Image (cartoon, rainbow, N blue to C red; front, side, top):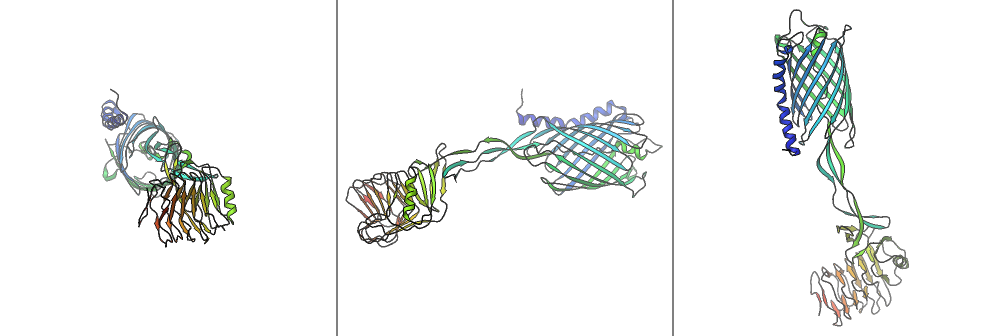
Length: 531
C-alpha cells in the first residue's frame, strides 16, 4: 500500500520519534562501553532555551561506541520540541586526544524536522572541531536533501486592472506564484575562549564564544547571514554527582531575515554511570565528552517560488460601444480646432481624454466608434480575451466644452460614438443651438455629463434617425428648449436611466415628433417615454 504524501510524512515522523528509545536500548545491550564504562561513559543532556522569538527544549543521549585511552567513537541522539515545530538529530562522531593538549573531532548527523507549516525536511550535517583546555574551534556544513521546497500557499494574483501606457490601455491580470518553504544550505563556525576566572583544572568554568553563520536563500528569500555570540558558565560534578554538569548561559544572533534572536539557556548533564576513579579525569579528558555544538535546526525560509500563472496582458474593450481600444490620447487644447484635429487623427475604438476648457469656435464631432471623456471619468472596460471587468479612471483635470456654437450643437455624435464625464453647454441664444446632437448615430452613448443650453429652441440632447441610443446618468441644468428631443424613428436602450434635471426647463422634458420609441428614466420626475 502506498501512503499519500501527508500520511507518509506523519508515519515517518512517528517512526523517528520512536527511534531514539529503541536505539538507546540496543546500544546499552550491545556495547559494554555503556553498560561497563571505560574512561568515558554515557550521559543524558536536557536543555531549555527561552527566547524573544521562540522557546524550545531538547533531550539528548551521548553514548560511547568504542574507546581507548586517547580516542572515542560516539553516537549523539537528540530530540527537540519548541513553540514552533519539532526535530530529531542522529549523529556519529570521533574524537582523538593529541599530546599537544588539543582534541580533534569530526562528526556527521542526519537531521529531520517537521516545521510549523507541517512540512518534513531532511538534512546531512558535517562538522569538525579542535578543543583544548582554553580554546574551541568549530565549523559545520548543513546540506538538506530530498524534497527541499514545499508549497504552503499562493501569492500574488489579485484583481485585474487597466494600465494606461504607450498611448493605449491594456487589461492586466497579475501573475500568481507559489509561496514555498525551503530548507537552506549553509555553514557556521565559532571560536571559544576560556576566561581565566577559574583555574584550568577547576570544576567551574566560564567560556565566551563568537562566530557567524551563512545560509543561501535558495531564491525564496535573502541570504541569511550574521554574527552569533554566547557565554556559558558551567559547574562539573554538580551537587556532588560525579560526571554531572550544570550549564547556564545566554546566546544572541542577528541577521536581516530573522532579525535579532536572543536566548537564555539552561542545560543539565545526567551521567548514566559514575566516571572511574581515581584518578579524576583531566581537563583535556573531560573535554572529550563535550556537547557537540551545531545548529540543530534545519534552517528554512519562506518566499516566492515558481510561477503558477503568468501575468496576462490583453486588449481592452469599451463596454459602452463594444469597440476594442485602439489608442488613447490626452488633449488640453487652447482652441476647439486642436481638439477636433486630434479626434480626426484617431480611428474607431480610440479614446480622447479632454482636460480643461478650450475656447469653442464650432461643433466638436466625435467620429463613429470613438470615445470622448473628461479627466476623472470612470470608463467601464473588459478584457478582450478573458472578459475581465475593470474600471479605468481617466487621468487629468475634468473636461469642459462650454461656449456659443452658432446654428450647431457643441458636440455631434456618430454611430457607436461615446461622450461622457464632460460639462457641455451651449451659450448661443439662437435657435436650434443644442448641447449634444446625435443624427444618424445608431448606438451612440451619452453618459455622466452635465448639460446646459441657453436658446429657447436649443435642446439639451437632440436625437434623430438614431436607434439604440443610451442616455445614462446625465445631469441637466438650465435648458432653454427641451431636455431631450427625439425624432425620426429614434429609439433608446434600457440602459438609459439615472438622469436628473436640476435647472429650469424652457420647453418640455420629453420633446419629439412621436416617431421615437423607448424610455429615458430620470431620478425624479416624469420619465421620457416614447411610444
